[in-house]
Length: 170
Image 1 (cartoon, rainbow, N blue to C red):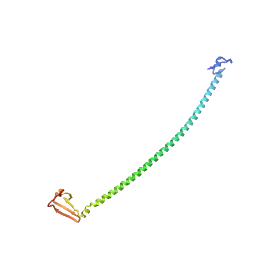
Image 2 (cartoon, rainbow, N blue to C red):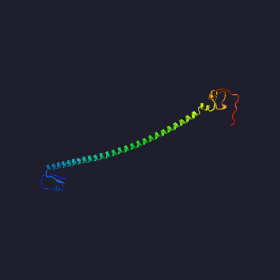
Image 3 (cartoon, one colour):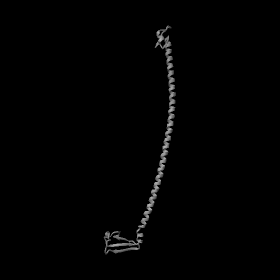
Image 4 (cartoon, rainbow, N blue to C red):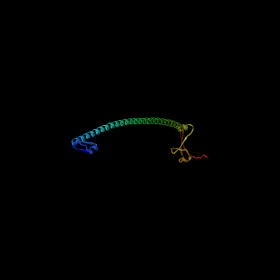
């Protein structure tokens, strides 16, 4: 509460008031001084807020930089681990592929030997013959329809006519 007056005597209001002024011009000066004081306090508070904010931003930026470095390191470690796994899988795949190729080559070689052993010329060299009925090789007397046969031996072909067929006892 403010008390305004021209006299110098003090009243009870002057005694209980926060401030007391004896002239209106002093009241205005007091208000102006109070406003200036509050502006200065607000300006100081603003500067403090700016400094604290800047400090906090610096702290957060430093923490972010550390976190980013940690994340980059972790990601690089994971990339390196994945690359090692890929290299290991690649190596295993190459080894297994080479094993498959080796086994396939061995099997082909075995089949080629077997094929060469079963070559009709090789078989006929051992004393066997190929019997054909109507130009097709036959293995059974039941498949012979035409009595005209061709019997191929190692050194030539015999043209024969079937006179009699006797089945084997089983």
